[in-house]
Every structure is written in C-alpha cells, then in structure tokens.
Length: 307
Picture 1 (tube, rainbow, N blue to C red):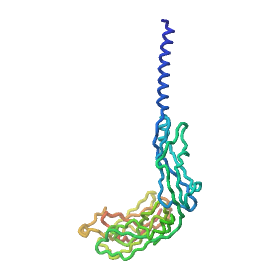
Picture 2 (spheres, helix red, strand yellow; picture 1 turned 90 degrees about the vertical axis):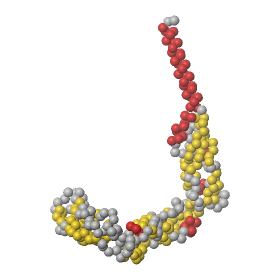
Picture 3 (cartoon, one colour; picture 1 turned 120 degrees about the vertical axis):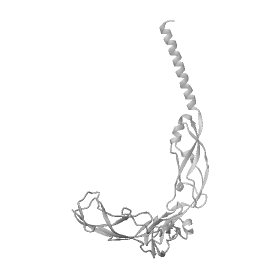
C-alpha cells in the first residue's frame, strides 16, 4: 500500500470520528427537556388604586426546550407584565386572570408548558390619605432616683397614603421602643415607625421624642481637665481657655467612688479643615468610659485664635 493510500485511509478514519462526535453532541444538545423557572410578576394598576390584599409577585413556570439553552434560561431575567387597565373585570374592581405566560420572550425552539399558579384573582381599591396618631412604646426603667416628668412627640401624628380599607382600620401607629435603661437625663432621642403594611407609605419614617427627666444629680466631679484640640488641617492656633470642668453621673453607686484616671476622660474640640484666620468658637465634646454619663461641661464652648 502506497503512502498516499495510507494517508487517505487515516484521514477517512479521523473524519468519520469527527462526524460521529459532532452528531453525538448535536443529538445530546437537541434533546428537549423541561426547565423550572421562577418568573417575576410586574403589575400596572389604574391611577389612584392599590390591591386590597397582598398579591403574589412571582410564579413557577415550566419551559420545554433544547438542553443547549439550559444556561440561557437559568440566567435570563424573565418577567410577566400584567396591565390591569387593559384587562376585563369580572366584577367592579375584581379580576380573574389566567397568567399570560405566552407573553414571555423565549429563545427560538423553546415553549412554555404551564405555570403554578395558572390563574390569579385580584381585587383593587382606592388609595387615600389619612393622619394617624403615633403610639410611643417604652421599655426598661430609669435608674434609681430618676423620674420621667414628661414626653413630647415630634410630630404627634403622621400622614399615611395607602389602601382605604387598611387606613380606615388603623387607630395608631407603633414606634420602635425606647429603652429607659439608657436614659440618664433629659434628652431628645430618635425612633422609627414600625409594623406598617408594605402598601402604606408614611410621610416620614423617623420621629423625635423629647424625654424630660428630673432628679439626676452629678455624683462625680472631674475638675481641671485639659482641653485637647483635633487639628487635622495642621493650623497654628492659640487657646484662650485651656481647661474645662465636667460633672458626671456614674450608674454604679459602688464603683463611682473609685477615682477616674486622667486618660479615662477626654475633653476635646476640633478645628474644621476649612477654618480661616481669626477667632472661632468651637463646641467642647467629652469622651467617657461606658458606665459614665455627662451631666455638664463648663464652658460649653471655647474661643480659638487661628493664626
């Protein structure tokens, strides 16, 4: 057998193997399988309307197609859009709809078999505005010797926008509880609205609460604390007041008799980066150990001459 015939023979063998491999891959990839895909549902409602009850926002869809599209289907962001103004009502503001899975955009050769659920029932109603009182919740208790003299909510009620049936049932709105164990003097604290239905929008989410506390007196006095200056702008400066006196409250009566170390209490002020030459007034701040609370710092601010 000549060399040319041997080469031709080997070429035919290799060609046959390649053709067989290609046909095998084609058969495997062209096999049809059924995929499960979670599809998001987007609703379009008439103006000024909302759902009477919470609705499903996704459905399980079974899609049949070639195995080659497995990754494409897994990564696809498939969504169903239901435009209620274009749908037929079975009664006023009530819809009974088959999920429009035929509207899904799929690769060629793929088809939707069914969905779970196959049908949905929707009821809508008018939206409205309503002002509802806020309900403050307190937990824990003040330290011994303290009395809560007064509470002031800012504001006392808030405006809500949502489904009429929900707002008409509301008598008050709960606020996140305030822990009295952490209150040692009169102060304003922030809390937030809790427990609103997702379909209800509040005019604000944060509420200020002024707690007026009486009876707290200083049980620790640290005098002549040197004032430290935070000077990130590297300014040359001159202090007219170099020390401050602070009055503290220690929540543990047994431990309060132990003297504070000099580095446990830090009185400081910060020069702003954009400070200009001249005399500026800076508020004093105080860093304390965890079990101490600041009652008073004197002076409350200092004058600094920026050179």
